[in-house]
Amino acid sequence: MARLVMKFGGTSVADLDRIRNVAAHVKREVTAGHEVAVVVSAMSGKTNELVALCRGASVLHDAREYDAVVASGEQVTSGLLAIVLQDMGVNARSWQGWQIAIRTDAAHGAARIAEIDGALLVERLQMGQVAVIAGFQGIAPDNRISTLGRGGSDTSAVAVAAAIKADRCDIYTDVDGVYTTDPRIVPKARRLDKVSFEEMLEMASLGSKVLQVRSVELAMVHGVRTFVRSSFEAPDSVRVMPNGDPYGTLICDEEEIVEQQVVTGIAYSKDEAQISLRRVADKPGVAAAVFGPLAEANINVDMIVQNISSDGKFTDITFTVPLADYERAVSVVKSSDSFEFESLESATDVCKVSVIGMGMRSHAGVAAAAFKALAEKSINIRAITTSEIKISVLIDAAYTELAVRTLHSLYELDKA
Ligand code: ASP
Ligand code: MG
Image 1 (cartoon, protein in one colour):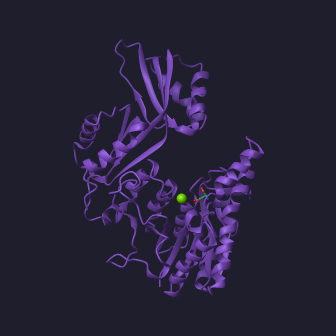
Image 2 (cartoon, protein in one colour):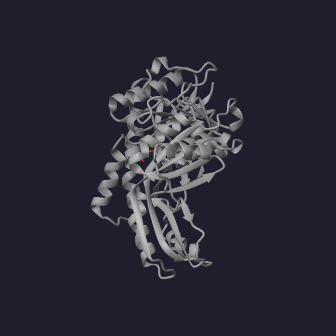
Image 3 (cartoon, protein in one colour):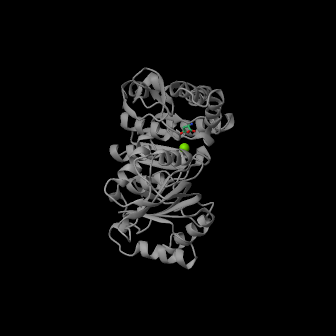
């Protein structure tokens, strides 16, 4: 007997037929003798629809009421799944965030989970009842419903798994695991059996949309064995790995990965915008003057490039911000009076392509090889950032596919 958390995303609960399919997956685990807590997303498209309704109601809507509206999508699917399970003879009960309670901080719309009391859930699980939990939502210190930011059901699932000390957290989705890169761009992309928490964290933050970043952080902190697997496999004949693990990708400790590759995956993100300030005074305090107001405006600056000036007086500063914050970032910079610059240039048709791998820590030349391969395809690099386990380059968006394919084969990720 094991204690499992099974999480199903929006496409897996898109309609009643799919919900029945999900219920069959749940029933399989219950019949196998496991204790099961399920976490569900809203039906696919639902959250977008609810977000649009809030915007339509008022562009500058109250974040608490936004949460009241958008949390409803998960309330519906948790109730529906409980009904379908009961209909199949499975003892099941739905739970909303506040009923458990999943306590969050006060950041409505992008709240972080502060604490989950797992006692009530565990009691029910031990009585043989399946808990069907609405993902994405919790309860803020003001006792109002909060939501965890887009994609937040992953985080709900991992947090619940940690709270009830589950043996495993299975994230069921529309793909059968984490791939070396987006298979829509590189058909030869391979499913990875295992990825380390650190690499998955980079992949999630750098554009791979499989898991919400925060869920990976939580899994890492609490050591939750998290599997990404497909909900589209026939529930009664799911594949298993030779060691009995689910067929999919295990996100785990680095130590568990025996054959460590130098490069594990290539991620990309088109949600970037580049801003360059020409001829900014080169003196102490300028970077603080530029980036301070952006931070105050809650704009996340990612890549930053500053040159050593040739005349000791002026320099150029280039940085990137999320595409959604681009207009705001430009106006923050332009309205700041604590520094001067000659001109502002910007580009929104850019893409950040990243090479990720723990092996980079101990292998030289990974970056140089990437730059050479991109040069051979005449792809110009606008900016570069690196960390111990990743290299990111900013390029013209038009070259995204070519760059991803080039790097994917450069590091022999096509090969089994
Ligand atoms: N339904 C929410 C969203 O679409 C949360 C989730 O699906 O993870 O962002
Ligand atoms: Mg998701």
